[in-house]
Length: 246
Image (spheres, helix red, strand yellow):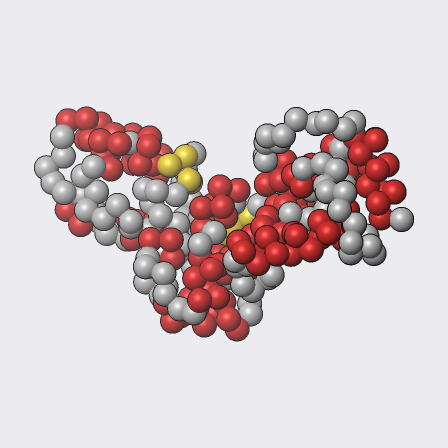
């Protein structure tokens, strides 16, 4: 689960086996049916469920952990190999997916990763200037008129910082509104600190800003809305489930 994105059909088969184990026990001929929706079974115990792991979210969390190692440039051989082989001069999220099927599975969680992660800019090589959240937000949203004149909307922060010629960054001439936004943006950039000798530092909210699969799982699972009405009170449900397991 930490290397391959499980197919929906595989998860369905595993969930089916878990349901049979929970409701039938050792009696394979038992036909009482499910006592409650599987979504409720997967809820945390303190929310009325049994805390059975949601395999889809757990699988996603384990793969996002690999993505975090990649963006953090962890000192492991596969991270260094992928950066040097595919992304020496480009931002991964703005590039066409390349590499093994395993790596493409990991890349499919770019959006999930960047929803939670924040970046302390170093050399800016892993951050999209216009489309990533940095400098207080997404610059394409904050300066839409100026972004329309960008010569490369997928440029990295490093790409924008290096040229001294506006013509290398924007399609000139700028409109009046774009010029106003350019002045505002330059003011923000002058207050920012860049270090071309350091890598970008990606972090997650939580203890020591380190990525945690359990925290990721809890965050994602807590946002799942229960679409089923509760027909059994939590304590009664847990009691019934325990009886089934005995």
